[in-house]
Length: 371
Image (cartoon, helix red, strand yellow):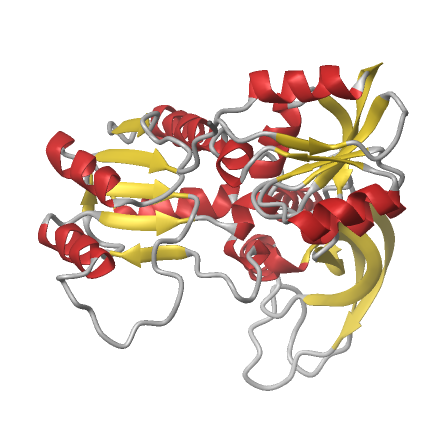
């Protein structure tokens, strides 16, 4: 058994809430961070049938992709579907957590799972909605403490550059200071100017962990008041956004690619528009309703675009652009992430010895049926 907050923290580590679009509604939608959690059910949509399943099988937390509370509410009428669902959840003390556009954007999330299903490699974000700010840290340390301080700030998350960790630069110089009244210096005496041989350590870190890095620095540094500075940089550490663009290792005919898409994705709603006579090789995608990025896909050289919820005139526009367009449905492009969510939480369960149960819902079906 764990607290709901523990699951929330784990989900924020996988799909940070700062990646969500401004209009979105993510995080804990029903329940308390302090309530106990024994069983988690992951799903695409929080429907009444999902809630009934959770009640019948003893789940006390639902982690969904789509937020079932999305638009503002002025009243809760329990005679209507949404009000009835809220009443059931509260009556049975079931928490509901949603990871929506943040899960779409995050690495390993909805769009990466979809790209994996389509056998794409060399993936890049199709759009850029988030750039992580990088800060540069410089700190002066007595020589004998340089290793301890460097190790502490790197352990806190500083010093990562792509696939390299513990990255830093250091040099030796002289530090000068005069302790004043009420000072309790580690080195030196009051009102006497001191000259100390010190090591200057420089490294970088993402702005989002600044407080953590500073806390580690202050704890490891022997001085009462360490001399350090933090400077903004123009470096880009991580860029991310909605959608992905990648390549097929072996080009194929459009009809073959459409067949593969249909075989690898769930659902019963698959349509396509032929926009060119090329072999399919450079493919862009956006899970759910992503046709708004069709022009971006075309401008980046994609010969084929996969998404859902395509309208007639949007399909027409694809033909005009000369890009193939595959409508694999909102459900079909997003449902695969439900198992990914369960796998992630189960791995956290094992690693951290939560001793809970995690299950992925496999009962959901596309609301559309093709005849």
